Length: 346
Image (cartoon, rainbow, N blue to C red; front, side, top):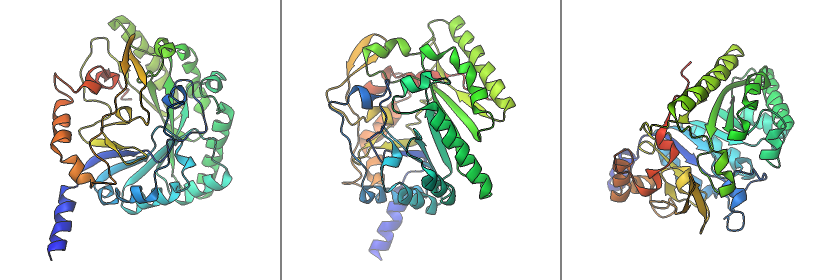
């Protein structure tokens, strides 16, 4: 009886979350020039999340809207990917992932459709051959070929899943070629695209690739450019979203939604978001031209405590209370994710 009541109490204390982002692999088979995995490779901690660690999250899945299997590595390098995804689906939760697309052979694509993964996002950083120079180890042609194969498999199986998205990283050097994106995605089966900017800068050489308008005129001009792309994509039945940083530091809710979401690293550490839990030590990063020492921010480890215990701890509670205040915690103080606005609502 006591154990039954204890289980009920634990269930009631499990947080209701918009999403959990789970890093099931910090290994990656690509070497993107902007990625911390590449820049910090000499001190990077490569690891796979064990199935036993993932299972400790299961009690929370039924109270979570989305579990996204992706962190600082390539998810499909974890041989337990499909077992983990099935565990999420059986809990009644939406499951998604993102990928560079290089490991998805015909057998894996078939498994994606049969297992009814809800969302798969393919990463790009260019709409021409420039993508291949930026996302080293990947090719735009292979990604598009894989997406088209997946679309044919879905139609053959009479399935709408997985929904195919594009996660597009917009660098300053790529502002001109992004106009090619709508035509690139036409007829591929992609339903949605998300345009993001370089928000975590791991190298001084990349500072010039950030997009942070300094005046409202520059900001508005960029919005006009992106809105043109949004409308063009909509003509091809592709919905595009974007967010860019306002020069007036318009304070909105952090796009990582740390009030109602969290990140689980491949070793089980619980953190507010993916940017506060890189598997690296003694690293430097840049905000503007200012150099900082990177310090992870974690509140516990799922292998040692339940997620409900970690979530309700005083330290984590105090963080969530402060994150959107006038005096946010240090990792969040200058983070671009706090100052994003102008997401397309077409």
